[in-house]
Length: 298
Image (cartoon, rainbow, N blue to C red; front, side, top):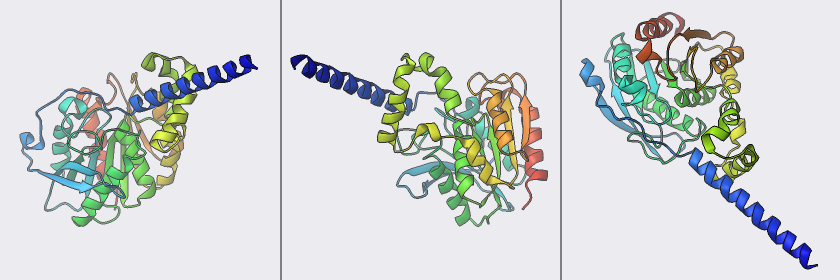
């Protein structure tokens, strides 16, 4: 009888340790890391801008942004950075330059800091699930500034792309979607890289998923932007991705394209992950501006 009691105690202790490790790993997975700081802003490129704040939709978090108004603009675009970046620091500090280039074509531009990044409130990220509220809050901001349904586009980089897809899947006011270095299925990123990234054996991964659902509130394994992308049809979609992307393989872009066959897929050579505009600025701008001018019709 004593042996059975000890076996039960040992099993309980092992289960507790397993769940504690899963909880720690889940919380670590959502932690926003440090990233290089840059000094660029749209004003350095001859564009007037203002710092703005608004609430994420159906949320209490205040989101920070830079708004580049354009008195003659009939359309606007939201720019959304990736993980461990901000409106100022994305694309190695080149996101303000990209915003200025787009603004000078006649669009109003709203650059936002996702929750927990830059100057926005929040402490963790959720692979686009809760970040969709930040993008939707940006849509609400632009709607209040007179932009009608269909007149708002959204460009998301990496994590920002997942947030843009999620937002557009439930908000028809987003008339066009541009995805830069965006993943199609979170499982294709986590499982192959789990051991190297966490230092833990695969045995712990189910426990992480279990504790994630308890602590964060949703099943991480169900984060599949490609499935949500299907809901955006027939709105125009542009997918930009590096052929040599080592973080989010090009196969992820192909999966997004398969989910939305009408989308335009552009493969860029010699680019790092989420650095397409930095590494191939001329091609990037050509494809982006052509899409905004000819494919996005209101």
